[in-house]
Image (cartoon, rainbow, N blue to C red; front, side, top):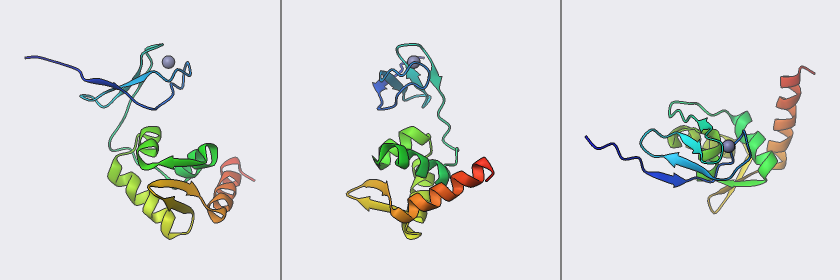
Length: 119
Ligand SMILES: [Zn+2]
C-alpha cells in the first residue's frame, strides 16, 4: 500500500525555533517544523476557548478564520461556534472574514487575565 504524505506549508510559526517553515502533514493533520523537526500535534477534538481566541487577537490584532484555526488547532466547527458566540456578546468584530477584538472584548480579556493571575 502506498503511503504518500502530502506536505504543504502552513502559516504557523514554530514555537521552538521560530521558523516559519512549518509544513502540514495532511494525512495526520500534524504540523511539522522543517527547520528543527518539532511536531505540533493537531487534535481535531480540541476545544478552543474564548480566552485563547481573545489572547491571540490581542497579540495579533486581526486574524482570519483559517489563521485562528491554524493557531488554536481547533476544528472548524468548534472554532466557528466560539467566534459566533463572541460576536454575539459584542466581544469580536468580524470584517470580511477577519476577526478583531472590540473594546468590550479587550476589557473582558483583561478581566479574565486578572482572574488567571489571581488578582
Ligand atoms: Zn522549529
